[in-house]
Image (cartoon, rainbow, N blue to C red):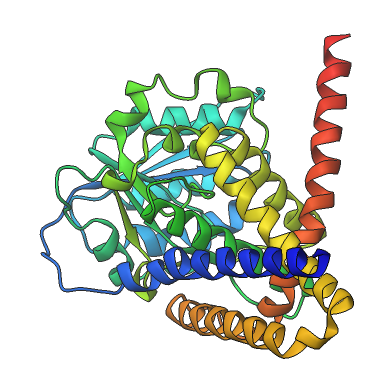
Length: 372
C-alpha cells in the first residue's frame, strides 16, 4: 500500500510538472512568435537614471540618442553622481535636442525611486520605458519594436534584457537565473497571472503610474523599483510580450556573487508584493519543483522494480523541458547556457528554498530591530 501511494504521488507530481511546461514555457514559444504587424508608431519617452556612470554616459548614450525616430525623447536624471557624469550629460544635452536633463541636488533615501519619479514627471510622451545606461549599442530594430503602436487595450510592452556573456561563473549563473525569471513572468502573464521581475526594457502607459499615485508606501522597498508599480496594473489582457531577438537589450555590467544574490533577493521581494493568488501559484510551482525529484528517488528506493516506468516518465519530461529551453534560449540569443541550465534547473530549487528561508529570516530580524 505504501509503495502504491508513493508511486501515485510521483505520477501526480510528474503530471503537474509536465502540464506546467506545456501551458507555461511552451506557451511563451507559441504566443511570442514574431508576426508581421503594422508599422505605425507610438511616441516613446526613454527614461534613464544614472549614478556615477561617467563612462557609460559617454560611450553608450550617444548610440541611443542617434537612433532614427523624431518622436522619441530621452529623459536623463542624474542621481547625485560624485564623478563627472553630470558634466558629460551636459555636453550631450548640447549636442542632442531630443534629450532632457535633470538631477537630484542632494543625497536622499530611496533616491533611485525619486529620480524615476522626476523622470516620469518630465516625460512628455504617453508611453515611457526605463532604459539601462549600460545597454550596449541599441539597434534601430530594437526601437522599431518597442515603439510600435498597439491596440488601445495594451498598457504594457515587455521585452527581454540580459547581460553580456563572459567566462566568470557568476556571470553564467546570473544569466541563467535572469533567463528563467523572465520566462517565468512571461509565461505567467500569458496565463492570467501577469507580473514582471524586471523594470528595464518594459514600456508602459505613463498615465497608469500617476493613477496609482506612484510608488506610495512601496517607496521604502529596498530591492525593487518600478516593478512594484507595474505589477499593480499589468493584466493578461493589457500586456504585449516582445520576446524576440530584435527587442533584446544587452547590458555590459560586472556580475559577481553579490549581484547574483541580489537578483534572487529582488525576485523574492517582488513576489511578496503580488496578489495572494499569484503567490499561491508560485508557491505550488516551487514545491512541485522540489518534491518531484525527491519522490522519484524515494519510489526507486521503495519499489526499485518500477524503475523502467519511472525512467520513461523522467525522460519524457526531460526531453520536453530540453526542447522548450533550447528554442527559447536560441530565440533570445542566450548562447552557451543550455547544459548549465539543465543542471541549474535541478539544483536551484533546493538552493532557493534555503536562500528564501534565510533571507526572510534576516528581513524579519531587521524589521524587529527597527521597531525596538
